[in-house]
Image 1 (cartoon, rainbow, N blue to C red):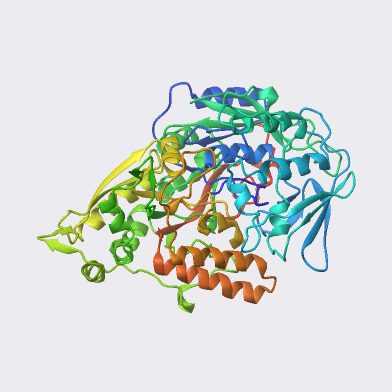
Image 2 (image 1 turned 135 degrees about the vertical axis):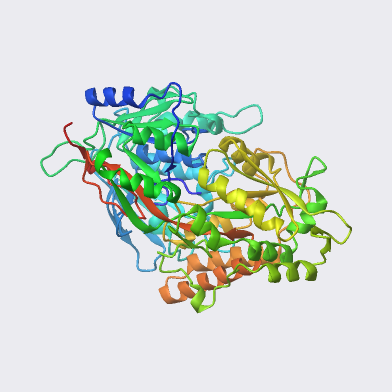
Length: 593
């Protein structure tokens, strides 16, 4: 859930987990390699097509991977150290009261269409788009400051400098305000023009049907072509600002290709056939691919624990839409029963998941804050965990009003406990985890109907219709700054999927309820953002992590290792769990073949 390289000024791009033994019609690796001999290009895979090319409205990973190459922020993040570095801004200053940050743009910046990039573009992006209540976007969530959720003000100081001023001290402002922005000259009309529902046309602007020439970028690449179900080709942005010490234009690689595949298996098949340059390696294929390193002329990089997670979540939303409950009221009572959620957490056999599915290449995860973050609160200091314990799981269910009829679990009214668990089809790891979850919960009398579905259908259920029961999914891209997850834990956050609030432009919800612990979690994340004393910040986020684990709206499962296979022809790779293999894409070069 996350999804963008410089939105949060981080370089969490490649969580492409690829496996493979089958090919796809229209996606011939040898053909791509032949073309690559003519035009220097990098080729990677994605298991789903983008839903949009609109940087602001995109909330899913397939778009995010592409947009990460097309948009650069005022600041960037070093993919190894996590330190902030100059991007489109050459410098920045923080006021003594810690409330104002002034960024200075570089001289001569241009958009990918050759038009000047100005402070006015930046003001437009924030004032007219991100802070526009008629435009639902998770980007806005991270900028809400304090208990009232006020936005910072954005002021033009002069032709090169812009000032962000928060209503109170806000520790993450430097990183967040250093994100990407959009071209006013191309998008202002779409903000001013309303559709039949009274919403800005911007909401449907730069969809997947956009003419690539109209899609204007600021990063190292711009869109050249998009063929649904096949590939997106990015070409070098001729107006990109970076140049090396010898004044050569960067990036050096002319094209970047995203090959869309139906599954992780198809992705790995293409990598092994030589048509793909970088592929995430899941543990079940690690031993096989490791044996092929020399023959395949590639190297597997291990960055340690990945900045990603896998979790299951129940839909706790008790609201109705047009008089119809989003979730069956019988099942909703189960899901909102804390003993039920805790029992499920105890019934999941994480050690077996690690051994059988991850082949030992993973660790149990207990928090949304990654272990690399200085704000991670470990179990040895008091973070609650849910060890595999079927006896404890059954005892919790009985204490929560459930009962057993033979080996089948029923609620107090005698209703058999059965629900549907969905995940995105084509992800072998999640499909295997879903199969084990079904088996694990059967051991405590719960019947799980496991259904992998198309990724875009899954996203629609989470963000639009809200008609799902349980979901197996993951987070990535939030980086080490915990405030990056505030839109997950804020009750009105766009990624608060386990109890999603009604969104602008969508049919309203009736009877939406927020529990006390949800409210408190949201408050703690606000407080954490307000606190500039690092030791106090750590204490606040420790409290938040404990509270989240006590109520477990997200039942975390496994933190995999960051493993990627990278072709040796790519020179300049600096691999790490934070940035992956391609975070310094502007510096990468291709060896002569």
